Length: 233
Figure (cartoon, rainbow, N blue to C red):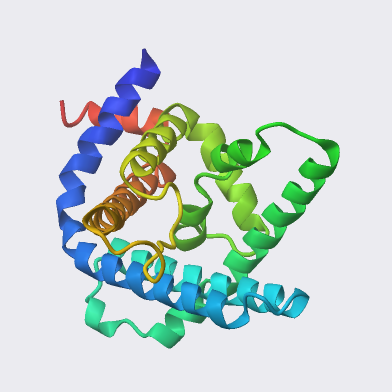
């Protein structure tokens, strides 16, 4: 019963705060289009170089993810988007993103060697709060992974169902849980265009919702939320 009541408290607070962040939808959609174009352009240019190309693509991907998370950080702070600097965004979370990708890659490599079934799904659940921990948390580098795990441990009853619901919605109308969308490739027909637009809009709305809800849960606890609700009931 406490879990259900806490979910209600979180949703109630989130719904009151979310409208303040919706004005960032155009900005975040624009950033997603830009990073998708840059990523697919990079794949065209250096995708077939081999090991060196793989390393370069990993660096580029980390920079582009950093830029997107920097945009979300900007939105969550309710800053004027005109003050954003792309160069700063590419590097702001670069180290944290690259470390996260490296750890996940090593875990996937070990899992494939051992033969753990559905390991990618397990990773998606276990580290589902990692993006938010990187751009909204207080840790850096490897500690971001620990912070993301601690967050899931405390808020699993809310965050895991939320992750599956959002993932299912994105898979149904878009391209699944992927930041980069096929802007350059694909058949340019009505279905492709509509699907791309829906993915961009849903991804952005979900990213903003996750950011708002993460801040609520990260800055409090079930006990604190239950205690504070007495003053507003």
